[in-house]
Picture 1 (spheres, helix red, strand yellow):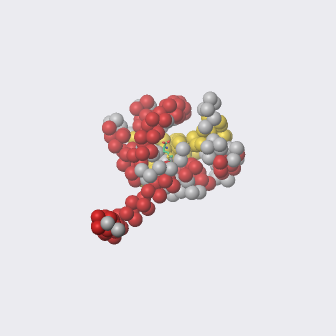
Picture 2: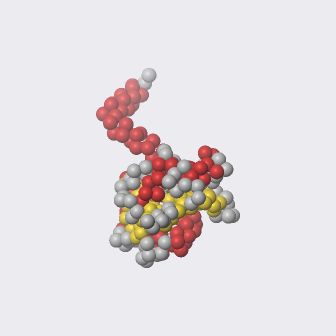
Picture 3: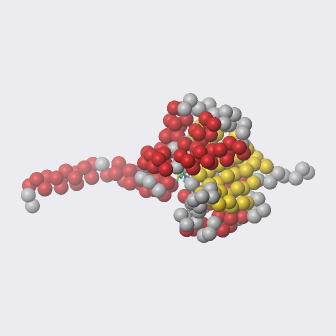
Length: 229
Ligand SMILES: C[S@@+](CC[C@H](N)C(=O)[O-])C[C@H]1O[C@@H](n2cnc3c(N)ncnc32)[C@H](O)[C@@H]1O
């Protein structure tokens, strides 16, 4: 082989040995990101959804704004914070906390809220839906978009959502319809997941949403009020 190729090979091997820990950490982070949101970096995700999903967020925001004016809302899997910041801008008395398993997403969302001057009412923290870092019954409502299909144990996630909702509070989980997420199986599976959670069968509604392109479904889950003793 030509001397130049040998040199190049030695440089590549040397760099791999020198930076192997960084390379390992990078690959580990990339595969965690793909598991959590299908793309290698939070920046790529933000750019993609910024171009294709703004209409979706606008529609969810007007739905949610009508349901929870002047309230405390928890967003699960808040990603780059586009929905939470839109809600903070549109609904002056709403306080939103976004929780996301990815610290890069939380950083990005926090920057977006800071840029919009909303940090007093819209903030984000790192957390897993399976072990939410919040006390029982602290939220009037919970919203989540396109995150449930990434949760390793959706029933456990819904149990945590049930725990942090106030009695009478409602969760709105927008996710992919079954033809985009085959495990949803005709969307019945979503109803089964919800029925297996503490929300139970009676307080669960699966609504095809929105009508024109049946790409999404809305899971509406209500935590019942305890009967007075
Ligand atoms: C496809 S993105 C959706 C982001 C945003 N809600 C949106 O609609 O653009 C899924 C989000 O869920 C988060 N996520 C995945 N698993 C999670 C978990 N177990 N707990 C909390 N967040 C999670 C990911 O980090 C990611 O930001």
